[in-house]
Image (cartoon, rainbow, N blue to C red; front, top):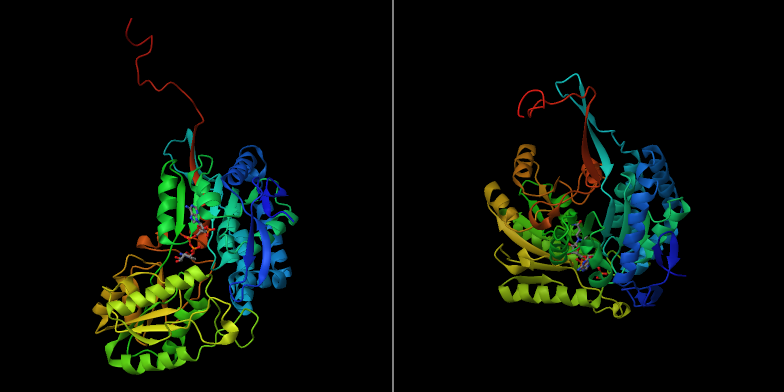
Length: 494
Ligand code: NDP
């Protein structure tokens, strides 16, 4: 079956290209999908442009758009088994994690369906003969580019608000993980999305993705991915002054004070960094711990990290899965090597597992690099793998200074039993999300995004919808009359 979805039709790539998808946990065959080139992406952009400029969708009442999004959420829930399985096969993540993701995807569609579109506001002109309104309108054609770590979840954070606001879009998922985006487009079609409103292209970023940042007929590009690619997308978008939303990486601090609930802090420090083998933009990859408790805490953490069981997506005993690709595992390994060369002390991991059953996958042991400080590359650079660096502090001021000492500002946590200190420190951290005595929860109702080089704009929450909205001021003089600014024939001149 063809896997590009353009102008309401499932089609093959114009040049006939295809790509084989294999599960990173064992290299088993998953699917063959069509591989778009720039020509296919431009065809998708043209379809989305036509649907926006001449179709009904942008003017469809919000209630009807919301009803469609609810139907999509229903279908996602009804297809949960199929979607979770497809997500796990593409990414290698444990099935239970994919099942959680699907719940969150449906919740995201429902949230944006229910987020009432205000009709704008009336502005007081101070003139009884004039009416002034600020109205909300869709931005236009949106280019949506998503990564491989949470393929369908990241797509839903963009597709749901784009549709809720009345836009049309072209979605380009990571070339490594296309399956659940294909299912999403099938569901949108079944739920009655008009032709051309939603389009899907699959393929490599540099060919199928680049036109979404460059093409003059795209009004907004929303990108989630790495910092280097994000800079490239922003630079390309500047040529046509597109609106840009970027969700980039993080090097996220997890700060543990000596007065924290030790068992909770320890357990969550593991989840913070090793969930999904560290392939999480908000992973708590920097443990910043008060010096007085470091030895015992880090010893316990290393003991627990050593016991984490790795395995494939359908292994009921597995606690963490594989990395996405050999290239990514090589990158993580090189990062660990560089950290050791800089003076970090390897406490555990730092290698692929020995287990024979895992040798066909791209697994990497949970790794702890001790005795780090913020001038080291391994503390500053994102590994996007299961690697924790450990730094120590004495006192609140030093904890804040160390935590803020990176180019990133996505998320982080504070562990303390002192509620006043928790609030003080939260206020001083330059991060888009701060957790206190917890790690990782997020809500579709609350904005998500980064300070500094972690991104531009926000996803989720009312601001997440706002990214997909343009504001227009409409001023009407209900009693038109000459302004008298320039002389008339009667009042001057010859
Ligand atoms: P990349 O930046 O490599 O890719 C992200 C997406 O961009 C992919 O679809 C990719 O396509 C595409 N792409 C690549 N080059 C271009 C280009 N020139 N023009 C347009 N699109 C392009 O990131 P990864 O997929 O490797 O994801 C991991 C990174 O994403 C991590 O660094 C992580 O921090 C970040 N991330 C951030 C999140 C956040 O919320 N802040 C969430 C998730 C991840 P293809 O892969 O097919 O080449």
